[in-house]
Length: 73
Image 1 (cartoon, rainbow, N blue to C red):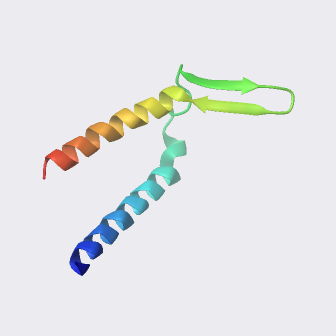
Image 2 (image 1 turned 30 degrees about the vertical axis):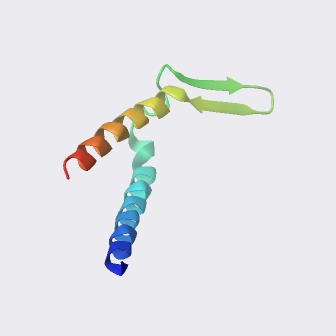
Image 3 (image 1 turned 135 degrees about the vertical axis):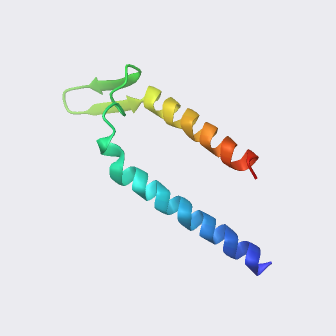
């Protein structure tokens, strides 16, 4: 039982590191957040940013990558 828990913790650790790297370098992706389906609503004292198309694109890419990873096993 404990070796399985160890493997799961290692996988989660690697995923957290990868997520951290993505967040660290996400500002260098020029089109992310500036796609036609990303909405910015500006008021007098508030700005609301809704990155709808960026979220859909990231979701699609992650779905493809994870399906390739999990089906390859």
